[in-house]
Image (cartoon, rainbow, N blue to C red):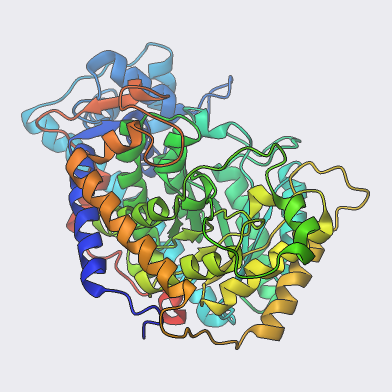
Length: 555
């Protein structure tokens, strides 16, 4: 694409090289360790499903039994498929039930027994991988048979109440023009070290990200897709302590996009950095095979930007709107995080490509939470959005509205959303997230979705062909160059000091998360010599997953 910012390509190349240097030690960590969730994902791909009478998944029960008996340093596959054969168990479910009752033993087989266990594990896991491939092929058939919406896609979040209510909301949103439906995950699920089984009961905080709910929502949106004559995509969250398992279940039930970013889990949920970086690589490798677009969440963990410098317009006319959107407590804002957002995106690009994601699957999330009360806030937004677009020209960028700035003032919220929609269109963002009122707002009528969809529809129709160009050395260009230069400086420091140290010292957001702290560290295991994971071996040893996808053709 032709650069409108006249970026220094030497600086861009240097930034990518520094991101690679910073990311490689973390990748090496992932290649020499495993986690309990990765091993549970292996069992799920091998066909293990369901839960015990107390609701604990059999994948957890069987993994825990193996760990207690022989450890997980060699992986779960060899002990499990060896026990499955030697004990005469009918299937993994039967073995899990026996192990939970203390009626099954495990060993790490050697010699001929190890070869037999490997072969049996490969057969079972290959069937699971074929299921991923079939779902990917089904997506391709549906997007071929049905019209596929042109970019920018309209992305809307639903999910209050039980899964039936979420389904009803999703189908209504599709009828009203949404192209991508995201289902809010139940509050607190990120910190559960198991994937809850069964459909979600009535809840005000969203639906569980699990196979049963994925299945129901996918079937409903497939029906809507056929009725509307266009493919409606489905999104959920592959993050938290069960990131590998949720990514696997998403692939098995044909979700199209996943919000998956370990940095959000580290900084917001206080998940151990080692645990979630190791989980992230496996999850993205599964997503690559399944044809899922992975959207990190840089916008959701970094503090809002503090804009400095003289104002370029008289803001008095918008003072009431700005006051409604500003921080109510009047707290001073953190230093400008825009360079850290760019650095995070470049790191995510490296991690994604290393795990096998193609360009069309790198769905970076741009949504820097700039204070709209500050001077030049819209110009700063344009600079950031155009910079991201030019750094990642083939990526399906997801543009976030100012979620933390929205209040119960409906009119102020609609105005802010209109500005963000306009910025997204002007900078060729691929996916425009519909702005919604704060969850739980006590309003007489819940018309926020309708208002937001009408807002984005109007701006897209009225300004969809609006081009963007800049005069020499304007504010927007200067701002973009400044952010890129500062991102390079930041990445140089991170590549020298180490990414884990940068996270520990608060480089990304205000939270400081040391490698030895946080939830889930006890689930990290160092691989022993002879570690065996059939999923990883299949993913690393075949190129069958590198198929085309309609998303690539649209960008």
